[in-house]
Amino acid sequence: MGKKAKVYFAPARSATHRGLADRFAAMLEVVGDGVTGKGDLVAVKTTFGEDGCTSFVRPLYLRKVVDWAKKHGGKPFLTDSCTLYHGRRSNGVDHLSLAVEHGFSYASLGAPLVIADGIRSRDYVEVEVGLKHFKTVKFGSAAYYADSLVSVSHFKGHLATGFGGTFKNLGMGLGSRSAKQAMHGVVRPEFKDESLCTGCGDCVRVCPAGAVRVVSGKARFDHAKCTGC
Image (cartoon, rainbow, N blue to C red; front, side):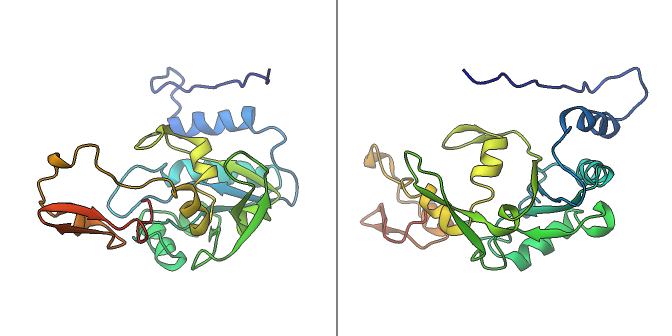
């Protein structure tokens, strides 16, 4: 049986007159012992948020991680990979522009931003894992070649798995687009009861791959085009 992990919690209310960011920094000193050493390139994996959303860990907290890594001799950089679905995070250039709009920059963090799998998600390393579903995985090269890794995740509901946190932030979040495609390969839209389809066409309008059309008043899916988003 594996070793049980210790979980640390910082309450929102405190009589110490210290803000949450400062209490977060104090926890880093406890949980981060030995994670990074002098001269290490430290990949800080997070998400910079999708266009128009607020569900990401704020730069204020990431700055505490950067300061902590530097204090222990590390050379931190913030990183994330390109998304499979079409949007402003599907290539490295738009992804970095969006990150800056959300407050992530060298000026605010004191560390550079690096898209782990490059501007077109072709900068990856294929790693042998020998697991049930995958024998190899394609991992963003910037994170692969780092000396140490810190995951900063927000907890969220997830359509396919129920909830997502650190494992999703790393397993899916550091994969190249081709790796994400493989992971989503079994996710395909289908009808359990076709009579419920009203033929409204909403699915046609939102499908990023053009894999849906309405035929005789019912949606039809072209699974050859589907990206499993």
